[in-house]
Length: 155
Image (cartoon, rainbow, N blue to C red; front, side, top):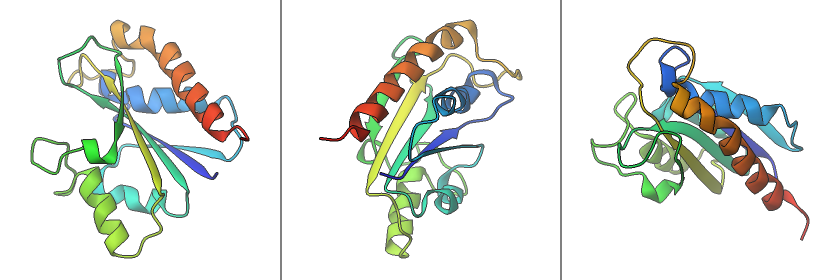
């Protein structure tokens, strides 16, 4: 299954870069049929990346302040709201962008998974994640990699 891992974030805003950091670590495993792309783009701008893949895995940060930094949430597209309370870029969040892409005839992956990592700080300039989030990255990489490998294993 042709899979795209999309690491999303801003590499100069501390924990906002965690999606990119995790994706880059996963790329080191050289998983078959898996391509890794990092981006600071969001919303409708992501459509150009995702076409022609069968599976899309988005790794990004989230700040709910309900769990400890480094907590990993596995979400589905349906879990992302369409209200103004969700992340927007160019007036559109990822769920709305994907729905629009499908309506416009883009070949959007059938399988879309979102891994959101609880963060502590996404407003301070810095090229490294906070210690609380950085400590959790190896475990998150292992967890996501195991899921990818088990889903790709022959039945």
